[in-house]
Image 1: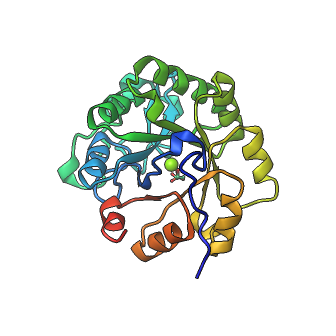
Image 2: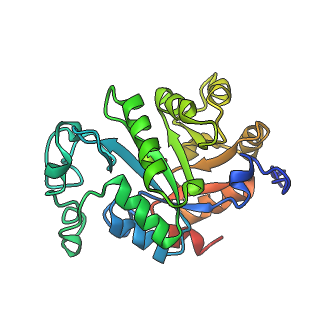
Amino acid sequence: MSIRCLQRPEMPRGGLFFRAPPRVIGHRGAMAKAPENTLASFRRAAKDGSRWIELDVHLTSDGIPIVFHDDELDRTSDGSGPLSAITLAELQRLDAGTWFNPEFAGARIPTLAEAVALSDELGLKMNVEIKPSPGASVATAEAVVELIKTTSRTPQNILFSSFEIDALAAIQRAGQHWPRGLLLDDLHLGWRDEASQLGCSSVHPQHGTLTSADVVLDICETGLAIFTFTVNNPARAKQLLDWGVDAVITDDPAAILAVI
Ligand code: G3P
Ligand code: MG
């Protein structure tokens, strides 16, 4: 029997932002069921019961934050080449749905502003991952914070995350009140210092790094909330939540919610 790292109601791990930990976060919306990072995917995540979504943000060549995962357009749209080389107007002519299923033909790559408006409409909380094209970490983070400031009706419902230290540092400079999470592909030496210097509220490790309840407990003791990705096996999700992670980021929120 593992010893869980329990939340203290008066000061939950990660601070007061995490008073109601999400448990399940829809990865790029509900990407198992709809084309990733589209408004259709965010709507599907909400319909499937997820109260949180995760999405990835890049900048267009004219500096507009848009929701997209890859540096290149080819895999998830009918465009090709680097996303950072095209303007918003060009991007808005692309189809981001047919590759997934012709039933989604005509789905567009959303602007972050559109995703924020939809989240406000649906009452979703957002984990906004800054996923900059090479060399654009600071510019992307600054543009995203500015966009959230000027468009979100519920900025208190937004958690930023990134693998990029420079991006998280830029968000930190924009204001201590913006919650930040450090994404980790591995639990490398020094990650605790990085999270601490960046004033992070949460850590987002790849779930394969969480090899035992003790590893989770060890992270819990830093006081950081734990959001782990990408967990699509319901039994594994249950195990991780039992060990004390605060949320699993999953491609299929309905499948995970069915077992927890
Ligand atoms: O935020 C969790 C996860 O999305 C990080 O990896 O590549 O799917 O954006 P990736
Ligand atoms: Mg992501």
